[in-house]
Amino acid sequence: MYFLYVVRILDIYDYVAALNSSDELFVDVHTDAVENNVPIMDRDALEVMKHYIHLTGTRHILEIGTAIGYSALHMLSVHPGVSVVTLEKNEDSHRAAEANFEKYNVTDRVKPILGDAADTLHKEIADRTFDMLFIDASKGNNQKFFEMYSPFIKQGGLILVDNFLLRGMVVDRHIQSKNRRKMQARVDAFNQHIASSEMFSSFLPVGDGLLVISKNKEVKNR
Ligand SMILES: C[S@@+](CC[C@H](N)C(=O)[O-])C[C@H]1O[C@@H](n2cnc3c(N)ncnc32)[C@H](O)[C@@H]1O
Image: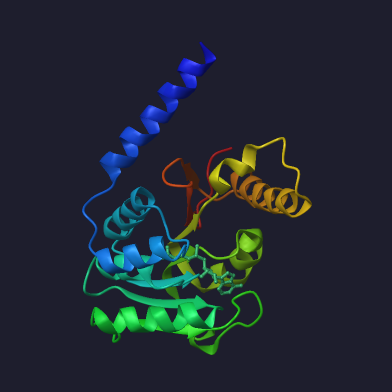
């Protein structure tokens, strides 16, 4: 009975994931990521994020975790007025992202920055206000990235965080590795912090878990 229940839930997840996904716009970048084990956002979560960008008329986005530019290209595709500042600490990934931005002719709308987002607050960011923050880097640093970068998001803006489910690890009670347990604890602590805060937030079970937070003046009823 329990087995059938689990199978049904997995079927539901797959069904919804397929409905939320659409034809890939950047096939070569997606293929490159898959073939070279570059971790990129799941297609269904990406489409949900793009829907939020569209719904809210978001234009100026700050991304933590560029990788090879896949999610940035998708965010830019929502509207010609969208611009992205994106931070990446791995030099090879940063260079690959630059090449992809050139290939798709978006260099005038995207500013890729090479550097450790947990270390230094780049001047390009400190001088500006963004409509949306997208956190998609080292998951154990979610809290730190949130504290460091949410002050640069306008009131009423959005903060999105990918992978709050850690591929299921966040609820795994049998983790052996100390490092993995530490990561689980840190991600869970951040999730709980947001859930118990006064900010409106939604933990969406799409992709690997997409957390959507509103940076609002109003607080939710508790
Ligand atoms: C999940 S990938 C980003 C995927 C990308 N957003 C996409 O969906 O196409 C995470 C990236 O964050 C980068 N990263 C991890 N910690 C970082 C840090 N402290 N500062 C900047 N980049 C970081 C990693 O090198 C990796 O390329």
